[in-house]
Image (cartoon, rainbow over all chains, first blue to last red; front, side):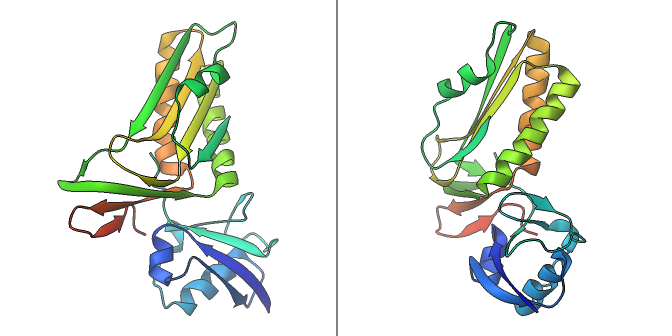
Length: 79
Length: 136
């Protein structure tokens, strides 16, 4: 079991009620972080609508978890 | 060149980053906070983003524009923090040999920026309610 600092961006912050939190993750991919985070807050989200990343790089859900800090990001709304 | 900033944007600052000896045209785009969206009066926009990821995303977009249109340079800056109508939210500058490529590339970059940059905005309305744009 790993612990990961998860940052919820945009609407995800309001949906979880926290900006970031350290949570236990059972697994070693970014998909496992998604499952842990959404399960914890009982959120029903389409994973295809969400992007994951480290503070430095975007990651695919199947990528091995190579950081202790993960950003979960809803669809962009820039401009 | 790209950055997120919590300070007011000066479009002039971007120009020097895209103009070189081979540049015959510079197109500068300013995205400005509007006071109305979908019929509702907007009094404030809150922006947030992930700085380093935004730099990567913009670099990818600018490289694509370079490959498609041929440009001499591209630069962008996007606001974070609390903005009000009239404030510049995003500014894109593109330099190219000729105006056609500069216009086309600037259009491509701002369109892609709105969809791909890790930036999010929350609109606040005059009745005190708010909504994130592009709710998942």
